Image (cartoon, rainbow, N blue to C red; front, top):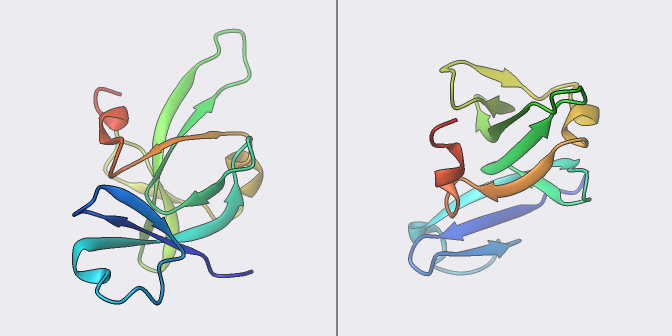
Length: 113
């Protein structure tokens, strides 16, 4: 798997993909690693992304969660819980969900859920 990164530049408010090698970037940026998985639209999922999952049932329940990187592993962060779940073995599930934003530019998506 190719290691891919992106960084959110807090000064400009922009996302920079594969930022390695940009001198002076890191003091004002948050670096994020690609999980290696893609969502249902084929968008790569990174640490810091916010995803929407929709249950395939008659009620079409949906919930929103974010991806984090904690203790050397990618995890699912549910805004309604303090605990986290590893994404290990969940590639098929992630590929059915949809990236709808990220924790830096779209934090409001995690509020009130």
